[in-house]
Amino acid sequence: MAIDTAKMPKLGFGLMRLPEKDGAINYDEVCKMVDKYMSAGLNYFDTAYVYHGGRSEVAARECVVKRYPRDSFYLATKLPAWELKTEEDRDRIFDIQRERAGVDYFDYYLLHSIEEGGNYNTYERLNCFEWGVKKREEGKIKHFGFSFHGSPALLEKLLDDHPEVEFVQIQLNYADWDNPVIASGKLYEILHERNIPIIVMEPVKGGTLASPVPEIIGLFNVERPGASAASWALRFVGSLPGVMTILSGMSNDAQMTDNISTFTDFEPISEKEKEVIEKAKDIMLGKPTIGCTSCRYCCDGCPQGIKIPDVFSLVNAVRVYGNDWRAKNFYNSHIAPVSRAGDCIACGQCEGVCPQHLPIIELLKAASEQFD
Image: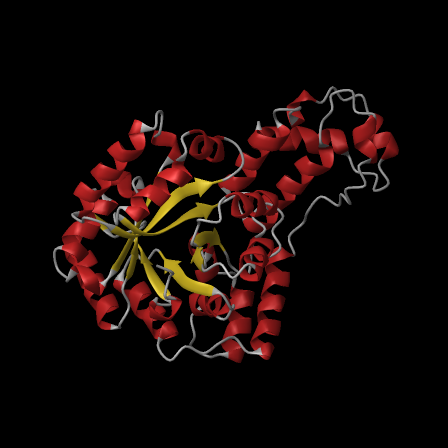
């Protein structure tokens, strides 16, 4: 059965950053948040096998499943590649998840965090796509998809190879739209062109866009007095065609209240507000970066085969977008297997041909400290 996107709530409740007390999930507070969320006519809950050390799925059972009729909400969870050694592990983990959550079926089920390398290879090696389809046929999964952290090229390959996928979850926010590591904009365009429903994670970039620098807050307040910075980020994503549900990992009542307000009588981002967001991005991205133009003159004669422009691109991504783990993961997956930044022997060949006259040797030393 195809996804009825019209019935899906625009705001999803991510159960990844739940309030805690004395080292345990605070069920009383979570229940209050769930009640406020459901009372607003919203009903999509997203959890995963690993969230809160395995306790998030249990919280879903205690705060949602036990307290509301099963047909009144959607529950999503995910299969973790890093816990899979054999094909038997797929059912073993799935059965644990159903027991934890107290359900017979999951409305939405995802292969967790597909990217180049380990996770992708594991899912393919253990036939997890075929397994997901079988679970859907058995009625234990209503809709099957995956969450994605890889490159646009891998996303297109996956969609070509697995037309059985019904939806995809990606990181999407205005700050990462042109981020070369995350490539939010390109991933969105691929999915939208193929009419694949999109679930958005990290619309506020882990809270970063909820508390930007004062200069950005000032810009927002001039155009929309009293509106939170988080509401700007959520409205940007919510205004994109093809976005089905936007997850927010809400941790307290104030965040819940603000987010519900944003999606009550939702107002799409206006053209003028888009200009304000572009100005905010300019401020955010106006941090000093390495002035490499990726001419790659330095690569041909490098005796160590270091992908110098690629290393610098990742350094710049971290400087501009924060210390995102994906930059380190990309480095380990695509650069380090060939040659690390720390393999530089300071021969100076690269500096002799660099049109930008960059101090490449020193920059590689710094990059090695950061990534190696």
